[in-house]
Length: 240
Image (cartoon, rainbow, N blue to C red; front, side, top):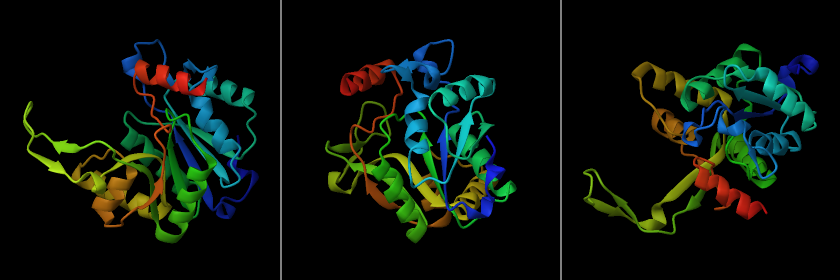
């Protein structure tokens, strides 16, 4: 799909669509991101939003091993038009993210550009999320999409017992997309590699490894992640 159509140094906003998970909770013969949901494969919702976004200069698709041809066919049917590449991800979200970052740097992308990461199993990606996260990353280096908690939040370190409560107005539930200065994310991932630490999202990684506080883009509850068949049913009810 040819990122050399344009000098990589000219790209300022790169989007990474993470499609590497296996989705084992669905008990299907292929990963959930390739399953039809609401009339088309789950992976195409995020792909189409990024392909149509005026905020995105280049897209890096990160997919499971063995699905390169399958994904290329799906993408061509979806009206692929932006400069992009498709690469094979790792066994975890953390590993796939690092593979993507190293790929961009190895291929001459400017370390000072902003890179946006989107879960391939969040189908309700809005242009506002993309634009505002890029704006935050451009100015403040780090940005996450999140919603405020509306339920009471408690901590349980021992099964069946609560140890304490967290003030609800201080709690945010994280979503994607998230966006960062490419060099900052690379440095944080290298530090995590050195001490063997793991993280659930890039915002927490950058905060704990580099001390950079992410700016918040306010998301919506409809920006749900499809993790279980129940999530699929909810998404299809909302959609239609």
